[in-house]
Length: 169
View (cartoon, rainbow, N blue to C red):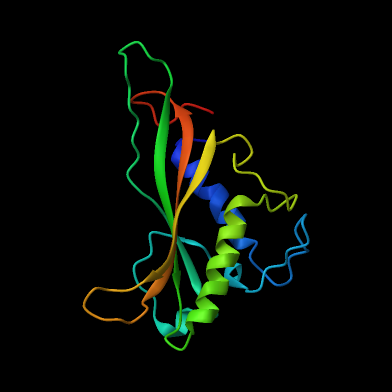
């Protein structure tokens, strides 16, 4: 089996968490239950557009953005990488802002929740050092005041080696 880059392992784990968004998922540790079935469709990496017939209740796309891996000294063996992430929610035009807010809430909860235990796990089973919330809300183009989607952004921090995408965590 070929090695898997760290960032792909992180994306894969988030895809599992997002796939757990279902009204059929047992209540989480604190009693919270998901209000949508956004995890029913495949979670795509970097999608750009869907046809309305492909959306169902909504579709999720996950994006791993440009990572910074600052190396302060030439001899450093490990550095802390910071990688912005984003989930985009694609929805039917008939979705209301209130429905989108519920979708955003379900996605935010899924990102922090281990799907096996229902407990918060911001380290993704030790893949990460930490994660921090960044932004959440509607995608509204500047030239129109129409909601084109929703997005949730956060940053993940993990240890890696300079110039090596495969170092195990």
